[in-house]
Image (cartoon, rainbow, N blue to C red; front, side):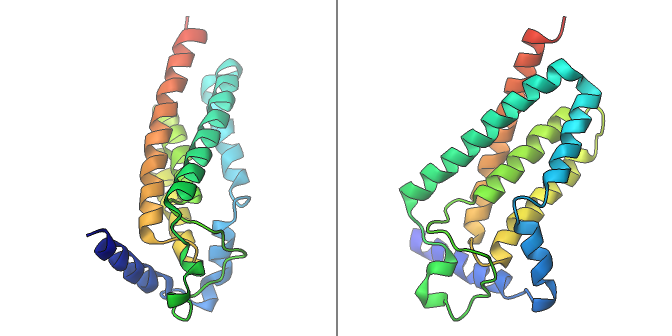
Length: 189
């Protein structure tokens, strides 16, 4: 059963990965770069500050640091536990993939890009929903695009990104609840 699922995953990866073309490669390399979205993160922090104030912002910064650390470290634990090779390291499909990433890490289950971007999307989207009701949908779409970029550049299977996004959503929601608790405890009178 698991082997059949992994086979389907490989087939879906090959299909999606081969949809790419050299025309779009540079765009997807920009999207998959972790530094690309620093302006977005800065803008989201500004919106949090604008709508919640400085004291709340300090709580958010601490919670965000904890959330990203948690999400990133759990992702690494999964990678070292499952030791599933990334598609760019599998010799059997090497001739069939479009590998355009800058580097290919050792293990890929599950995607850190997917989990971190989804955690950020859910966390900030929920906090800002009272002020910008549709922002969460934009952030979820952004996270899905970042996740897909990992398949496009050849470093993650679809299951890696789906599991990463699922874990990121759970993580983002947990830390959103933590932020709400801390706001009630230390900010709200």
